Length: 131
Image (cartoon, rainbow, N blue to C red; front, side, top):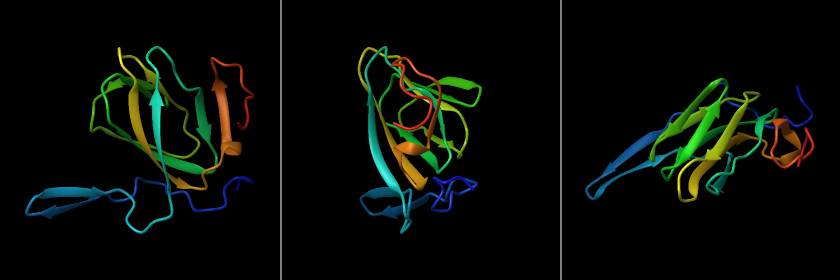
C-alpha cells in the first residue's frame, strides 16, 4: 500500500443513481460517500501532465466541447455529458482542443492530495512526483 493511500480506492466505478422527479431527474455520483469534487478548466491548446495517482481513482464528467482525454493508451475527443472512469494508478491526461476553455467535473474517490501525483510527461517541467 502506498504512503498516499489512506482511504479505500474503488476498483470499479461506483454506482451512479438516476432519480426521477415530476420535473425531470438528477444523477447522484457519490451518494453519501467520501470524495473530493473539483471543477477543472483547461485553456485551449493547453494540457495537464500525463499522470497517475497512487491514492485515488477519478470519475470525470465532461461539461463542454473541446476536451481531449487520454486514459491509458486510448485518446479521444470527449463530448459533453460523457462520464469517464479513471482507476487508480492508470495514466491519464486532459487537453483543451477546442476554441474555448473546456471544463470537466472531477469526482475523486480515495485520498485526494497533490503528493500522490506521478508525472510521466509535463509541458511545464514540474517534478515527476507531487505538486
